[in-house]
Length: 274
Image (tube, rainbow, N blue to C red; front, top):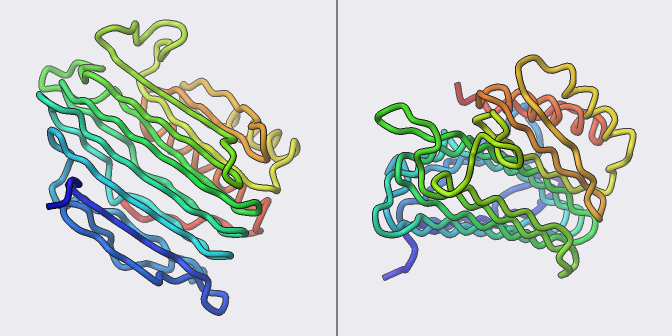
């Protein structure tokens, strides 16, 4: 019997200028919908599904996505990721991306909602070749509890490792443990409740683009704080703190539009979830 609660493997290739799946495999409580070619673009969007509706005590999920040279893919979730109470063992989510030269990946999952007494550990490992482009986002909420309390989960841990030509070039590690951390204080959430991250790696990154993104974010409405950091390679990260998921989603979407129009002279697809 597999040690994984759910397994998903997806391999993409460029076939005559159109990106298609050459292999799709899933097992257990992890599935993927049929591909949708939004806006008649030549690359598909896949929606990830959890038939159980959420992650339970001790669940372990493994996803591996590979993109051949010049293959493109948008990957997202059907709805927010819900982690329920984990009285004995944390939920573990492991994702591995393999990206060949000139491949393009958008991985844009919905927000993570950890319920009271939940423990969740997510590990993303990205192996890229030069010329590959990655856009990855995540959003952490203050969770949910029957009493309406915020930050009632036990632990959220998100670790991302990005390798370029087998060399570690970016490492991001977020670990939130409300019981032992002053979540509202300086160095943590600083009075905000939601945390968003947007990691972008692409050879077309330059100072002009970063200036455009900074100006774009400043024009957004709502109460939020943000920062942009350049990476050691051609790329950057954007960190956003706000009090609503929708504010962070709107900012990430606005940045996504700037990047797509600047690099590819087209708009990103609207993922049509609500």
